[in-house]
Image (cartoon, rainbow, N blue to C red; front, side, top):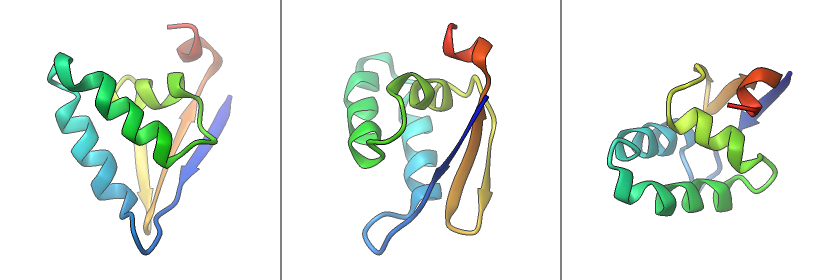
Length: 78
């Protein structure tokens, strides 16, 4: 199990960016570009974990300006 904390900066408001990407992820043709944007913004997080987040297969919470989510081992194989 791994916990990821995606922090905000003066240029990126993470809760808003993640909400935007989740909304856009409903459109299959936009998924590769959205995943590329999020993966480039948070390079330390595995793409598989980010995809699970954007597909809403895992829950996240907002802690101030930070998005926090946990990826369990069985989700990594899904």
